[in-house]
Amino acid sequence: MNAAHPSLTDGTVVTNPFPVENGQLVVGGMPLERLAARVGSTPFFAYDRGIIAAHVRGLRALLPADVDLHYAMKANPMPALVQTMVGLVQGLDLASAGEMKVALDAGADPAEMSFAGPGKRPIELWQAVASGVTINLESPRELEALVAAGKALGVKPRVAVRVNPDFELKASGMKMAGGPKQFGVDAETVPELLREIGRLPIEFRGFHVYSGSQNLKAEAICDAQRKTLELAVRLAESAPSPVRMLNLGGGFGVPYFPGDQSLDVRPVADNLRAIAADARVRLPEARLMVELGRYLVAHGGIYVTRIVDRKISRGQVFLVTDGGLNHHLAASGNFGQVIRKNYPVVIGNRADAPAEEEASVVGPLCTPLDLLGDRLQLPKADVGDYVCVMLSGAYGYTSSPLQFLSHPHPVEVLV
Image (cartoon, rainbow, N blue to C red; front, side, top):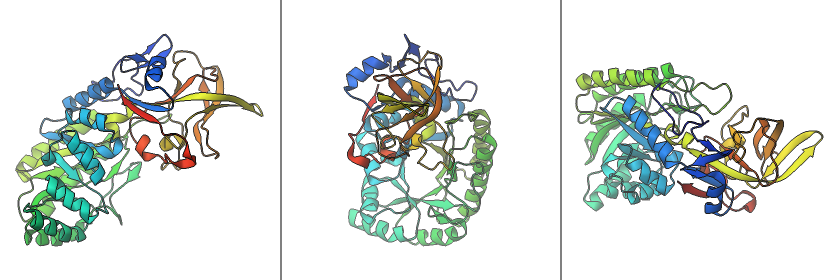
């Protein structure tokens, strides 16, 4: 807990990189109680700029130089954070026109941005064409709008084909490829789409294959990456021009739950070196990239909420806080968990105190689903203490039902 910054020198992530001083978590060099005073209210999300930057630089140093690192903004599109990421990564991957605006406002190069999503509206496609962003085609339907936009704007649309491969990312927390999927174009129909692209005033860039997310098994990620290269080489035979970009996807997982083993990135980096060497021969004009979201920012953020009541019901201790699933749906277990597990939770102003009791942390909402921590071993905490949910830098604020029961929204700060 006392490491100032996470380290990737051994290929793994420090789960809780925040230092502790006088019993308090320190975020961005500021003790928690002082940070809370600066923010002015709880709950809030706080992201540590130094921790995130050190982590990204550490990963960048492990990866081969000829494989670009892209940030998937859907993990956390906070404008100040995106602006920081622009200086740390080689490109951004977007999932909406709203994210595209944030990226452009942050000074990102449109030529290093790609736009994916299975239901892009015509107006979003026009915006992407006007901005010079590469559109990851997920349906032949998108071509008509792209051609119309290019003709009207006098711009040649840049496209890559998002491929739904005939394989999946094994051991993935969320499978996004293989079998019937709403994402991408089925691999077997891609050659026909490529021939259509060749007949249109469109600039073909390459392929995007995103097989899954939240994977802690290096061998599964390596296997999917190798298969992605083979698929791209095969599809390149039908392409109207040389492949200039190949997005290998991401999938790097974060050890949220008890028993999770941190992903060892070293074999993944070694595998990428071999893939890059192979691609230099078989796809000589292609730039390779990996697309990561939660892996880059999750560990650098915390969700801070204050205890407003301490209750004992038939012998069970409940710490009732001023924020809950309406702010942090993932920590409540209602964001895709089949069997609910606890995120790491710390009493932020008693961070070095020993555990003295079993307690459940619940929010203020009128539903039993509002559970941030179930029967945790914690220091004895009372009204006014701070509950901090760790690993909250990704899929927190914007992934939660903020309007539910009309409680105030949390603040986000980058420190």
